[in-house]
Length: 87
Image (cartoon, rainbow, N blue to C red; front, side, top):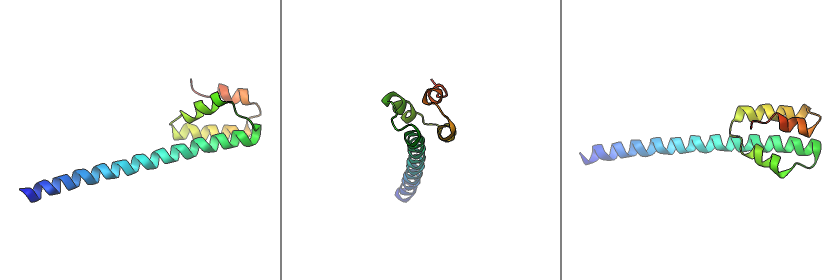
């Protein structure tokens, strides 16, 4: 009985550990994508308003961030970039 409980707890711990690792990895990928967008904008426009930085840092959708990164590379006007952001 004690051995069975230990096995159950070990399984629960392992599942939680794996889930935590996966969440950490996903968050790291999102942070990297946010930084890529900001860097592209800074290279192109030099100064980025703090409000725009805040908006980008609050986007958690990695696919959207990848699209915004591409847009940051090709767009000619920072105001047009801001208009493309979700509300």
